[in-house]
Length: 598
Image (cartoon, rainbow, N blue to C red; front, side, top):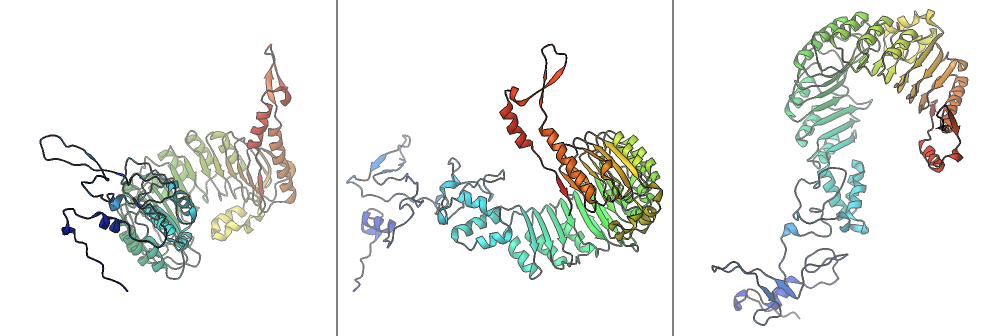
């Protein structure tokens, strides 16, 4: 039978609370043991409580003229009953499963990932002292969960409360998100994901279904600080965003600096106005009626048009307007079948002083005169890509005369008028060259069935078929800095000699007429050789030469000068005091070249 408990009133005595009432209020009855400290609330494991039950420190400020006096009172004094230990404020309390004030150390330079400072600036909090479910330290759990994809984070949030709190903190601290959006319920899925990431600045989406302006509106609302967005589509998805909708999105996002979008066939025309946009990539463009670039800080632009003959885009007007309104352009890439000499002249008239990389691809009407115009206006190019053009060896000569001290990457694939002599001259006259692509330049009569002709470029295929007199050409390249060389589809190449100590990637795909006896590779740093579609004897010769070059590097002995200094002799490993160290060093430096057949 329950009896009514007596009511304890604070006015019954001169003290605010009696000792019994204080003890009753502070330590309620529990049916099981607690894993936390009863005084401060911190976990008991490895914890030394700073609040002692015997002595209580209190500060008493007297209103007298003397300075404030700090007195120490003993709780066992008979004049005053014992008082409970003072409770901490809620901002200073840390529960076992709370990570609000834990200093999680990760790869980001910020110490506090939620954007606010720790309540104890002088204290050094170790994340390993915080224990979550399963006995795993919070720091280890953070490092594990931060490497999971978004789907894995969503699944980890359902394990327990500690994991859920950690995943919430990860979402809040995330600045970059790469996501593949499923075809069903993409708006609901994107809304639920983006609202978890208020600090998101970089977003990359792979759409598996059609996308329209509703997705742009969802991104604009959920990501106020977005700086970079990349939107790609699968083979079955269609991008239905129009030019007006894209222009409104760019104008509204004041922080946007990089925009990359695929499948822009439905734009029809656009007006882009942004003072922060510096990188713009648009692909699959088709029949643009209006193109306005009002982006004074734009530095890199990439425009790829669909390879259709009925494209009606006026590239001359587009390039002229882009050059006038974007004076800070440094990298320009345009891929279109409608590229011509008039477009090049319009580009050179813009006088872009900071231009460093120029790529004009698939312009069969670009000739040596276009190369002369480019060389006269832009003499500090570091990359030049004229793949698919009609330039000849004379154009390569002009390139070598103007860019010997700056050009490091030269791409001349699908240029039917270039011979092996022009390629050799380019490698001899460009000492800074590191990458060169000459695919489908030295072709045989079987080049009409090559995969590159499936693009619909009939003029290039016609020129390739008329090069029957250029069969059985040889190519000799000796370069000290060349790292990547591509000779894919050079079926007219008969002999090849490479002496490139820094070469690490070689593409010989579809080099059908290259004889194994006329192949010489002196490239000790070679890592990848692509030989898809080559003869079996050629593949065996390449593997043998690559293995021999690696073995010759490993078997080099140290050189030692005699006492009189007249000549050098080879010293065996046993005579060297660092023989063991050299063996360990050779194991680390040992490399294996990959001959890629498939």
